[in-house]
Image (cartoon, rainbow, N blue to C red; front, side):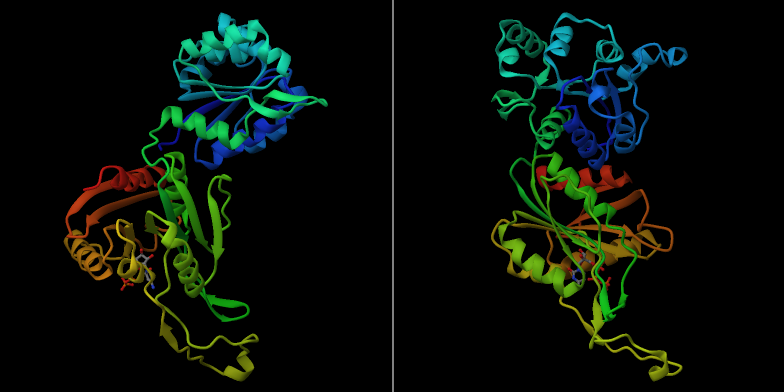
Length: 398
Ligand code: CTP
């Protein structure tokens, strides 16, 4: 999914503390998040917390930023507005179109889809006034998420508890994006493997893991059940993605072998070391004992992608990557064609890497080859948008 400008409206209920997780999940999913909090919301959760998590200033005052016409600018720029928690009072105001604070103005001034996550006591939720207001909002196309049934603020429990943040975010993103991968089980590998030499050193590569993580996030947003095997990455992914961390190629191979049988699709975005040191020293290699040179003997690692293609279950789709330094377009294509044939993958995503290209950058340029070697798609842009183009191969197979 492209990077969205998401306005998160936070209103004054105790569930405001959980809105921090809503903001965080949206940021982690790659979106630009702007919090508009009511004055009462800021009694429950601190502005610095929201600013740190959203990475943007938090707005709450109607009479601030007047010169930039902020009361309409925020709503006009929004691609999506999520109000979480939405109190009974806020819901009543939204239903009547009131705009007596910055959030009300922002919502009225916006044509973006509106998602509200009510949170209140059961009596308030079931009050005929609230029931009528919710019906009005739904009739206008507003998406209402929850509330869930459970423990409320006091000793009581029942309907009225705000839905879990991840559920709110999933429902909100589903409103703006396609859910074309609903239920597909997708295994993604990301990052770069490291082959240990001794307890403190390794042979590694410069993969940042960003493209693989972007694929995992985009797949989850499109409804897939995602497992991410992360090689040497600190991944801060939404709870809906199951993340497994590995280090070396052999660890990655084991993790993939265990997870692949349950996957409908495997996407091998990890940069895998082709060779590893034959022996791993059990203590630090010392220069006193090595002298002026050190010979490393490397042995070949298993080709995980090839092994997957050879042993796949019927119907499983396998997508590989090719990292190439070749500058000539025709030769790059030739290398890609040879690689897709050699690996037996259904698709190969070919990207150029180099000192300044491919790794640790925000953007990527790729071409996608079918098993037969035909160019089925090309994509250039942010790693998020490239991720979506790659996933389009699954919803519109070539
Ligand atoms: N790959 C793998 N196991 C390996 C090496 C690579 O599964 N031992 C996978 C990568 O995850 C990627 C694809 O194979 O999806 C191609 O990786 P790449 O490094 O481009 O190609 P190699 O097979 O290593 O071939 P070469 O280094 O000769 O280009």
